[in-house]
Image 1: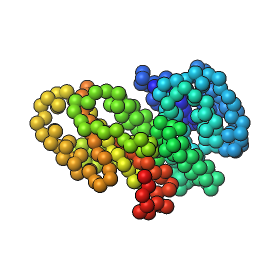
Image 2 (image 1 turned 60 degrees about the horizontal axis):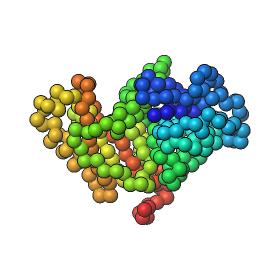
Image 3 (image 1 turned 90 degrees about the vertical axis):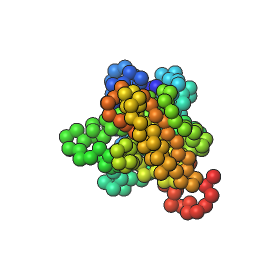
Image 4 (image 1 turned 30 degrees about the horizontal axis):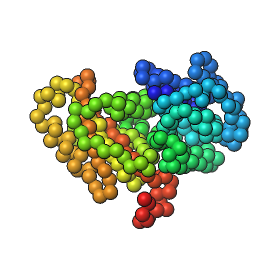
Length: 284
């Protein structure tokens, strides 16, 4: 998979994924140099990045699966649609990082909302393969207290490690499971983790009106062979999550780790900023 980072946050998470051999990383920012780096001239406004974004002939050559990572509050996110339009031979999934919006200035908050909503519309219409929404405050809540020194590095590691494990599972054969494909229109998603012992879910974004939820269990070969209560424990948990209008499925995968893991993905067909406008309407 090719991983493309835009801006400081996007490039930092792309760099965190570069430690895994499955990814080739590209970076777009105002101060990047070297192989697979595409420098952008610094601009004063979001609108200038959109208006003056250059054409990169090399981008059109990038094909296959592409993960495009960005945060919407920075001015440089104004270049995001112009750059995405240059991926003519790729299936692009967006990993969108939302900062703590309560700390944003009015202009930053407005442009963050605009970018996030437009990208969700692109995904819902099929112009993007999918968009994963991630909110930094919820990632912080997942991993616990984080010191100021290395704060963003800790969050970026949590996001990149979770995405990587889910990507590995999705490209591996499950030992057993009940997977169902999400609805074609359900392209707005988020990631999460589950504490297997107590069943507590921690999601990276408060995704409303989900249509599909999938749980991915990573269990050691030894435990798969010896734990007679594991199957009952997993299926009981999954059954407890079934509710009307939501498809719930799971898969169990063999790992080389001693510790048990459970990661999860939630999919919706609804642009999240529009949820409060829908009430009880049939959203299709």
